[in-house]
Image (cartoon, rainbow, N blue to C red; front, side):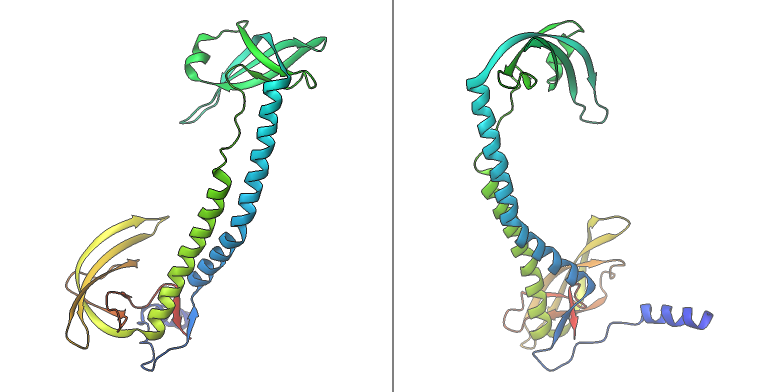
Length: 256
């Protein structure tokens, strides 16, 4: 058992082997790369669906708004109770009753805090209700508004854009690993760039020289324990465009 544990620790501590010298190299996705590819596919597939769904919701809301404008009548309602939700952004709620269709009807609405503070149980408020559906009512000034027409296409565009960004990240790393040249770089600066659930990300700035002798300063993201300033790290750079570089191993792809 101890021997097995020792082997696991040795495997975790051993450095990642260099990619093959021959190019182009065969590349495969890592676990993180598979997740990114899956998310990119989901966003691409759901973008038109989300746009169509939001368009349908918007159309229904517009039809309801038209009914409110043409089919409703006003009535005097009385406040039955006042309440508010908990949390940093509480909702201020009012329950009311009003006569319609030969009996008392009940409704509920979320209102502004300033208006809520002025109301008491028994206060009179004005409501609008549908003649064909007396049970559907709204406080005057709080009628529902339809989604703007630009929201559905924007949602589709946003989904497609996120998908394109994710595929672009995968593609950049695939090309860099397949065609890139391995080199040693000296770490110049380390900055914390973010913190997740118990994990940290670091922005590492480094410099290296290409085969032609050109000095290039690059920046990449590293997770876990970052390298020390002044130490050396392995990087991959694009021979045709050395400005495209990253610390090796890459997070989304690995040699096949």
